[in-house]
Length: 257
Image (cartoon, rainbow, N blue to C red; front, side, top):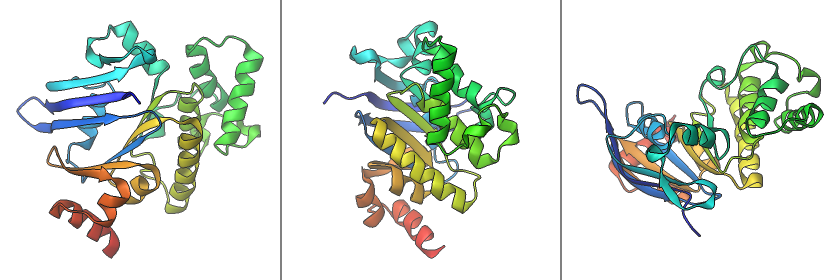
């Protein structure tokens, strides 16, 4: 099986010399979920920005197999090509759903816009598909025309997930997908995400500080500290038998909480 996404020695430093991340390499395959964990300032968010085309790395390369044409450097693509990639093969689930939704457009309109971006034009079919997806993420059908700003945070996050997955992307980036939500809402959302990702065979990169999130969602795990990957491997292996002192500290802090 060919890799879908490849990072080679990716690093990024900000103005003033502040290190974001350094020397990160991995390959992600279709249908595989990679978790990236670490405390605030560990570099995981910078890495996600580099992988998702939002931040151009200072060193190394990020390559993606767009349209089955083989791995291509994301930052060598033209601006129109990159925008097309964002609308079709990629999706980004943002920590704050307000950053990933149009708050003054109805829930159905938010989902339908993504379909229109990939060429759908029949209003009846678009609305039907939007309704189907809102139902799949447990949004009552009677709220299809309601504005997301009238929804709870958990419902907004579910609408954002429907908006991203409706176009069946091959790769999804998730930035703290359950951050800021109540524990009970987090559990339901994680169950929902796990089912949808598995059913669709979507590859994903999940960045979080919450080990429960990666245990439930990810196949492989990278632990980051001070911009570097200090440990990586199968998720259960890393969490059940961490080898690096920092990984051990992370796991023990969860167990003692």
